[in-house]
Length: 505
Image (cartoon, rainbow, N blue to C red; front, side):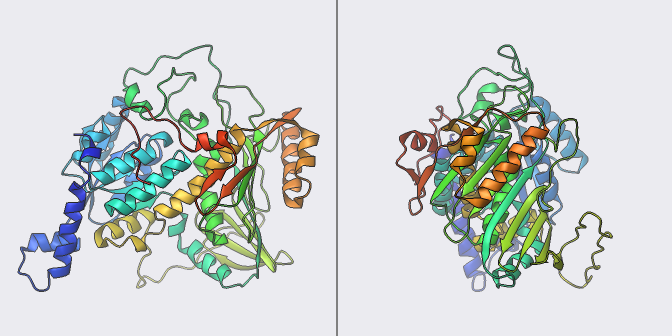
């Protein structure tokens, strides 16, 4: 049965559990039923959908949480499935395996699913799972398009599911404490946020024609809602990130983590009034279509956000990557009285106006510093929950408000990446000098663009033209693009039957 035909199965289970929890004090119930309602003694049973990369780390993180079992695995590649089954069995987990996720989410031996498929499957897989009564741990980005994000958010509301977005920095105690400290005004007013994703991404190569699909892969299922086109790259797995039909470039792959951190510290809960991209794919010619070098300008009214993507090293022949004010893959937040550097998922450093360190959260040593040694935690103090632990706790309590990164946070941060991608895809070539002129009224963007051009020059990759993206205007109340029919068309792709995302919003 298609999961879209059984929307009430999970709702019935949840209604029953809530009723049991609410009346346990007055009813004489079997011990097993009471334990299930309270979530105290029953294991939370996880089904893993997609685990050829990040997904296996997620399964390991979930298994580290007390009283969690992995009971099922699904992957469209039977070779990957066999490896996953062996890995779970070595970890003491007896799992049932599936090639079709629709079969896994029908299983009565699965309470929640972990989804780490390619991006183009994220929202549909999650919605189908919620319709079948499952809770969801969903890897980033939680959607592949703006429209999908809206349907995902509506599904959580309609089916009452617990959904944790996989941008795990929000579960970091160091970042939580630093965010509260900055929000209290200790550095004054926020002036701007600047995120960086300087991560080496070499060429994926260029093929002369269509490539054979691995015999172990069900390619129709692999494509799912995306167009079922010929494979025009040398590798099916992972390199889908760099093709628009299935991925969102490095902004939607790695950068969405830093976008989410920046937006969190900014206190912004929606979309900016506009979005603009500068960039391209430079340094090599290959089969990828997403940019490897990009500047995104998101001018929120209180303070703007800027974001950079760089896939080339600091210079030709180097193996090192650039760093901006201590940030390689991170965020720099400039305030009136200093700035915050967030160089990792678990550390923040505060600087005063003179650039002197005034406060730290987490363990991180700046270049040239004596390595920072964290104080040993108090063994009597409660251990903070991991991102996976936070999800499991919410599954047990049915308290969605306790989630570190709920569906709304995941949808908005993913949407910022989608806006940047749409701007780029609708862009046109512009001479480098003309690009400088285009952004000259924004001093910080102009300086950043200048550094980008210097970076490309050092890689012997400075082009004659750069892609100036379309300036997108956003209705912030409706969270949709206005005044640009071509951009509106890219908000929602046309999925293939039977892999269509349900219309819920």
